[in-house]
Image (cartoon, rainbow over all chains, first blue to last red; front, side, top):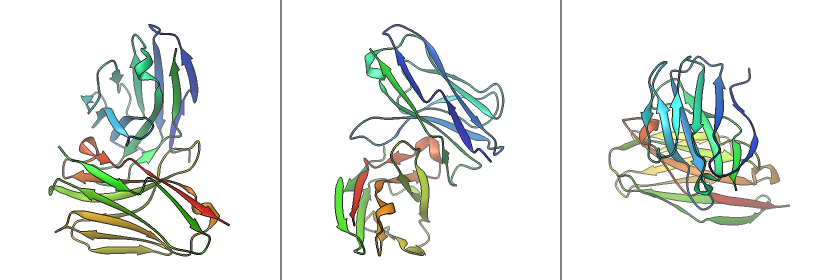
Length: 112
Length: 113
């Protein structure tokens, strides 16, 4: 049972480039989330989804877009990367709103 | 919105000693409080959680206490072992679920053999 898998694990982008981070879960969870983790700060929610075909903004959505075309996948896109988006990105999923969230291993993104 | 403060930011203990990490929250609507352990290079993993209708919960060497009146909750690890070394995060979640979660800033725990 793989749980939550993120692709890629590391990436270096130049300012202005675009990329997509993929999150896949095999637990049939309805809820999926994208967070960013920066030094000295707690995880902050970027976007989330409460089911296939739905997405919503979290605390820090600017500069990111998401899509949930399939229940098991949640994609995070950066259309024009900026150095301020250098961070570690985590995807998570949960079966319900107030139950354990399972996290992926993270994607370390550096924008130069 | 919710504000979660976590202390201390770093904690060093001798193997076998106890470790305590404290979090305070501001929103009385928060009713679910998970604790996550993050090992180097890995994603956070739930180690214990507590809901607002419970004052204490234990799981082997780990316990969490919740004081709703004072709006604080604590993680207690007894008989610490080197493999407990990691970053620990608390979180406060209201009835709206993880889309409204607020995480603490993390505590780096080092257990010295």
